[in-house]
Image (cartoon, rainbow, N blue to C red; front, side):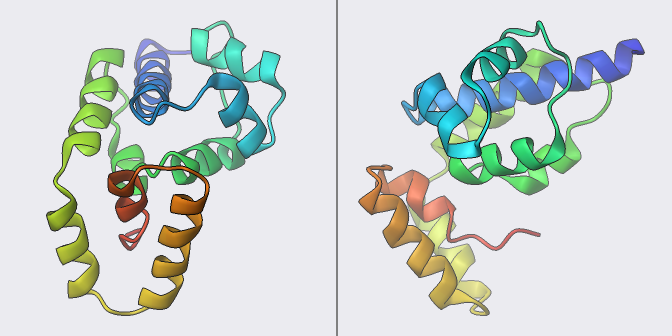
Length: 137
């Protein structure tokens, strides 16, 4: 594995870990939600396993109300610190901006609203749930 590939894996790991911690979701809960064995998830989050299969990564981003666009734009040379910083910035974005972006692209609003309500019912905080209303670019 090249240095840049290892760095991007570290950046993705830090992005997911920071989102998980910011959303106050435990490792067992996230592993269960994405259909991954807990030991495998912990091994990946700790860096013992370098790669995560794409379906698990996509499910984790969705469950954590992360940004698919940010994940896609993590550069090969991105560091773990940069991945964590992206997640922290995403967590802190104001709900009003998220809702406004959802309003500006009205297609599929009903599906996003249903997702928002499902997340609230699961105990996800309103800011995180509002993020799920955003269209994935």
